[in-house]
Structures are given as structure tokens and as C-alpha cells.
Picture 1 (cartoon, rainbow, N blue to C red):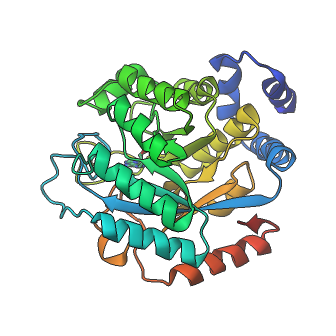
Picture 2 (cartoon, rainbow, N blue to C red):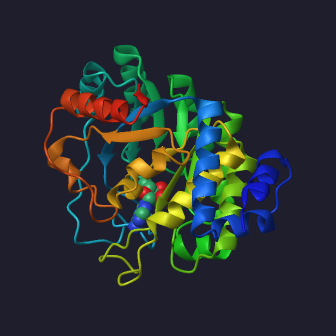
Length: 334
Ligand code: 5AD
């Protein structure tokens, strides 16, 4: 039987509960096409045909955390660590701006070498030299650091909730807990950052009920952005040997998030692109793509999960090629 009535109801309801979303996450066959078509229409109505292209600079792979799924975990002795100097970071930002990018995401492990002041200086310089819209993705910090970086000119902050199952969250993050992550997210919003959250699909132990709660968490937080990607097993972690999350289930979560959130920025995440999902994601709700501008010598060291692209290409050509590919899909990359 069809699910369009159910989707209409989800689209219109303000106070959603997980039980409304679960059947959609279990959609199969022709129901899947209904879901993707509905999400594509909501995307067209609320976001238009623009695809927002974000440059991402992965500037340090040092990390104090021990996330069970991530290859950068603190205890990983089989990883060569790197850290870009403030001059290198500002230089890379200038290259990205020159190539035509308008938004830059600065991402790293939780690396305290970048103190509040040092990070603040990097932010000030990038804003002064390039005018790029700046997103930070550097994890949990004292609220005072967040406030200072905002005053230095940072615009957005990306800190995913990763999973809305509290017990699972605490098990996967022995160095922190769900409550702490949630407090950081609320504080960042309060400080005036545009907040990005998101979660992984197919984490061992996760159920469709968890995914329903993940999507409702995005709504509750009123995120402006949500990165939703499949879990990809890294053989050097505690989760070695586990199954990867499925691209199809990830697409369902993206589509449903579009219907619930309406106008949020929803990227086709790097992890989903690795699974071949880019084109499909853009046709079922996604409207953002991230492109690496990390210097080539560091790329393979930013080994969060396997399969990430490391081949050499000129930033300008990389951006122009992407815009061409998007145009062929009837979309406009900016
Ligand atoms: N598979 C998929 N995504 C992962 N991340 C970290 N480890 C993995 C993995 N094994 C994601 C997390 C994090 C982002 C930087 O990468 O969602 O927020």
C-alpha cells in the first residue's frame, strides 16, 4: 500500500513522534519511490535547484577522543599525526577562496594545540583576508572558547549528535556523554552560531526507532544543517569486523529529514558519496556537497574511515568540474 498519506501527515504535523516516522524508514519497493519523490518536491519548493558547495579543510588529525567508530581515536598508534600551522591554514583558505569557494568548513580532531586564542587568530585572519563564510567543526570545548570564536567572526558550527540513543552514545564515546554533547549544541545556538548536527546510519546496535529519534532531534534543535552518512567500518577500531551502514537506508533518512525539516541544508555526505549515493541523494532531498581543500600530503592521514578520495587535482578544476556535473543534473552549484 502507498505511504503518501503518511508523508503528508508528517509534512504537516508540528509535534511528531517516532512511531509516525518508523514505517517510512521501513519503506520498500514502490513506497521508496513515493518517499524520494515527495522529498524531492519539498526540496524544490523550499530550497530551489541550488546546490551549495562547501570547501572543507581537515587541518589536524590529532584527537583527544576515543570514539569507537573513528580511525582518528586517541589510542590509535598506527596513525601518523599531522597538524597544519596557522599560516598553512590561512594559506589553504586563501587558495579555496581564489578557486571560487564561498564557504569553508574548518575541521579537525579535538586538538587542544589550537588554543582559544590561536584558533581565534586563525578565524580573524581568514575572515579579514577572504570573507569566506566560516564553519567550525572542532568538537567539544569550554563555552568560553565558542563565545570567543563567534566574536572573532566564525559564522557556523558543525557538531553532530552522532546517535540519539543515549546508551549507545555513551558506549561509543567513553570520553564524554550525550548530555554534554547536547549542552554544547544548545549553547552554540544560543551564542548565535548557525548550528549543524547530524548522525550516522547503520551503527552497530542502532535500530529504526533510533533513526526516528535522530531525525526528531534535528527538528528539536532547529538545526540549519544536518550531515547524515552511513557508518563505514574502520579496521583499526574497536568496531573492526562490523557491517557498514546501507546507502539505501541513509537515503531514506535524508529524504525523511527533508520532509520534516523543510528548508535545512542537507549535504550528500562524504561517507554517502563513497557508497555511490551522490546523485541519488541530490534527487531525494540533499542540496549541499562538501569538497576537500586539504593539502594532498595530509589527505590520507585524515583517515576517519576507509575509502576517502586522496587523488591530486587543482582546486579550481575540481570546483568547475563539479559545477558542470551539477548543471547536467539540472542543478546549479554555488
Ligand atoms: N563511518 C562513518 N562516519 C564516520 N564519522 C566518524 N567515523 C565514521 C565512520 N567510521 C563521521 C562522524 C563525524 C564525522 C567527522 O565523521 O559523524 O562527525
